[in-house]
Length: 505
Image 1 (cartoon, rainbow, N blue to C red):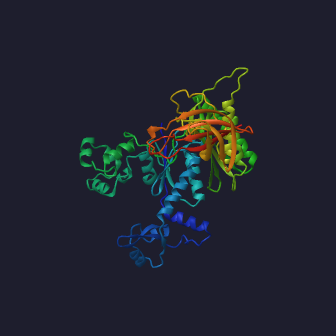
Image 2: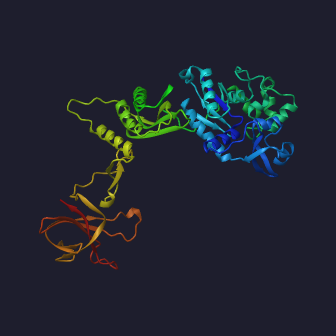
Image 3: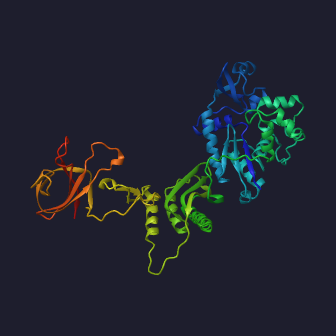
């Protein structure tokens, strides 16, 4: 059965403001004095949020600041910062990932979580929510929360249900349907004040009377979501996780040895789950939740899918050496964000799995310096400088080849771009007899060629001419790979040019 938790922070803007001021060691308004955050509206400044003392004086959100000051002259006020509220709420969502990987913000002052199959890790739903509430209170946030089978039911119970109540939705007001104020006002005028009153009406009449263009106006859609008759997805801030392992600690862990031992358990659990599914991890994220409310995230990428627990541990454990644990780590989560097929293969007695060894070496290099080993891969081009490109080891893109290339002699080092040179030949189209390159003239004793390479006309490039390649050797035994660009006797064309393209041993 699906279980979802809705958290509501009724005083979130004011509590977020006070928490931010305390972090900066700035003075904060006393809780006994009326205080409000103000925002600019169409007709001047209005109250965006008020504290408990201001509510006792009858002040409320949306009231004009001038009217509020007339009623309460001692009202303290500061400018509202909605962008900071949103950023702080997203930070709380990431902090709540210690309880579930599926967390979504419910703007402007709520959080939604999917906890299906999770509460038993924290002693049950009641113990889990009690722990959430106590931790949030320690950080200065007042929270109301509820757990139910649908998002709509959890949302309604968190905001309109009584503390510790059951999932009885019939007595909740119609505002608990997440409809707009106009639709709720219309329902109340008709005498439909509770959800129970709506469920007793025929669906056809309800649909005819309240079929608004937006979902907040459509009472029937909201009622179906509340009762679980219409699916409602949870748009979590993190993508779906293939495999996850989580551990919470009774006391914060500070020592490096303690974190390493717990990491070994997490990698072993993840590796076993991946092996059962026939998959291997390609991207991992290790999340460490600090007791002060902070979070450290360690991402690791792999070049080939792997469910080798030892390899995963060796990739992650060096990153713990420079970790700032603060006052201690009280929870760790290891998530597999991307996985690929990895079926175990048994090698023969004389076989050596060099591909796996090379991939693991590249993984260790990347995890330490965030740089990947490179390899040359063939691409579809017979122009020498285009026929290969450097790719990261493990790049999933295949080499694009349409046929077998002719076996020709190629140098070990190629210049990109080719370097200009000057050549003297017995006849214009004959082989070179001397080569002048980098202001040094070399006498040619031997040559091989020419090898004609035509332009790639399908690229649509203009001014590209055919090449005739020669492998030549001078009187000191040095070999050069040179070519003549262009042909003698071309009508209206410039004279051919010579280039040194590579060197051989």
